[in-house]
Length: 229
Image 1 (cartoon, rainbow, N blue to C red):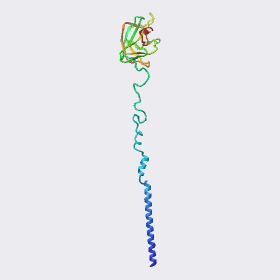
Image 2 (cartoon, rainbow, N blue to C red; image 1 turned 30 degrees about the vertical axis):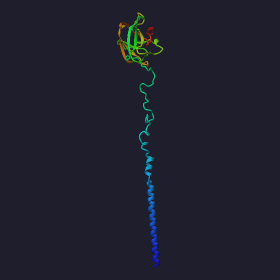
Image 3 (cartoon, rainbow, N blue to C red; image 1 turned 90 degrees about the horizontal axis):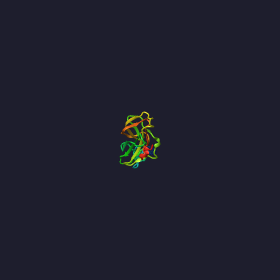
Image 4 (cartoon, rainbow, N blue to C red; image 1 turned 120 degrees about the vertical axis):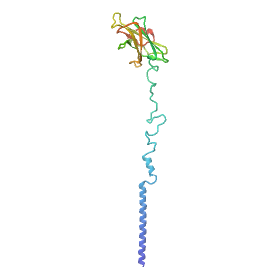
């Protein structure tokens, strides 16, 4: 009888020990699962670390400050036309803002005078010399380089500039002399190369005789200065 009780007590103790071991194993399993999943808050932490905020992930990075582009430069700084470049602020005289006339000079002989008058509302600059062609000739009239003025002639509204043409060389030495009827006048830009605007086409005085030695002066502010060459 005593032996049976002893065996029963041992069996009961073994059962309790087994149940305790199982419970500990289950607790360890749950703890391991929780650790592997990151636990509460792990998902939010991963988003903040890996993806960053929605603003930082947007194209172009942070939002530009007012008046700035995404690259940091100020808007509207290209300047475009009307910027602070070189050259005259008034612009070149052209056929559009002037009136050009031609007349025969009394002295010296065989000379014509070109007069350009500013008909615009602002000033214009008579750059260089007029580019001239008689009738249907292709070659431009040669320039008298000795007539270059000290400064560009600037014309206020209503003011005039002058250039003279020597039509022939020494008497009896005319080369390919002929009578011309029309004159095309082109204006020079500030660069001094080429022409600007459309030509002014003038009727020449009757019996205008010219040869291949014809030349023209630079624009002058005084008619007598133009006729002095």
